[in-house]
Length: 336
Figure 1 (cartoon, one colour):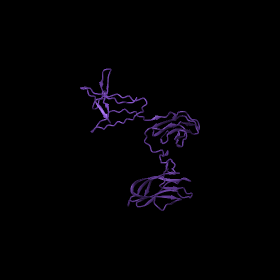
Figure 2 (tube, rainbow, N blue to C red; figure 1 turned 45 degrees about the horizontal axis):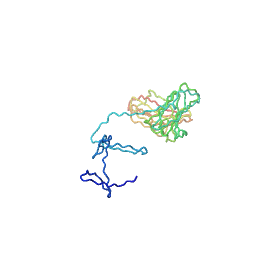
Figure 3 (spheres, one colour; figure 1 turned 45 degrees about the vertical axis):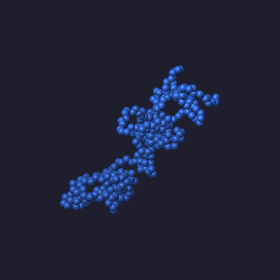
Figure 4 (cartoon, helix red, strand yellow; figure 1 turned 90 degrees about the vertical axis):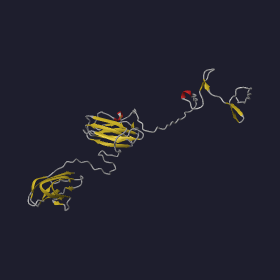
């Protein structure tokens, strides 16, 4: 229906009606009110109103959502924050990557993929009475396991291995050795926070950037002791280690010397009974001396097929002008 203009003639002495003149057309000003028939409640008035006095608005059913951003400035000065209840997830046990089922000779446990989102690391705890191998695999899609870290378990020695999670999915596998297990316990826990280095660590704790990692050889020293060896005043004597085993190379690890008079000492290697021309260690005036090699391969001597001694020699010089010295000496070395 089209809007038409209607002329209203005001009678003499009538009540004026407020209108708004827009380009010659008069628009009556209307005050909105709510209320029952014949009554009204004033809703809109000049100035800001409280919520209870505001005009309610119903959004049309086909009206899309309208984002509302609220902001408020904080008052100046200090403020205390009261108790805040936070639901904290400290860790998540992964049942599909945990097991206690006994594995036979060469038997395997294959865990299933689990999402790593929200977690930074996985900790795998394995205990078994037989040797085995632990594998921690990671994947982008839960199907293709492109990254795998492997660790060796020695029977009877539990293994606790944390690994940083970089892929979206993780699973755990275990392969038993050649003997059926007497017991087997494997537990995997996802952790949101874990104080570990990146997954580039080897089982020995070294970074995988090393081209060749030295093998771990047990330190089982052999020793030769010169007990109560008399050294005359101002003279010298040689204290030798035992002969190196056939086909072996000795790594000198430690020397302990004690005397009742001040002495000096020179350490040399010996091959086929001939001492090296260079002194490998020089000891100033002492009555007791305890030396440890800074590294396992610092001083070495290989076996020689000749008839002479292959080993280490410590030359002791008694510095006292008139008294003889009783000297005690021990050599410690590895053979590989």
